[in-house]
Image 1 (cartoon, rainbow, N blue to C red):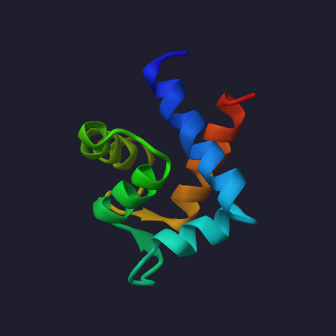
Image 2: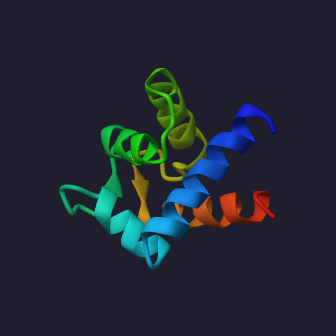
Length: 92
């Protein structure tokens, strides 16, 4: 399993095992309740998914680069949902 697949798998396991829905996971990590995940909030998600500390900054930046469709450098619910669906598809 490559590094990317391993990280995506850990995120999938976190969301599946600890939250009833992906929306509940999003709400949990959206600490300020603004409907968007900041880079630091994404790092918190990655920490909970047991992603190595060194990699969290790199991975959070990459996730924003890939999934931030409106260019605000944040991940909103629709972008998060798209990412989770893609992660779910890749883990099959």
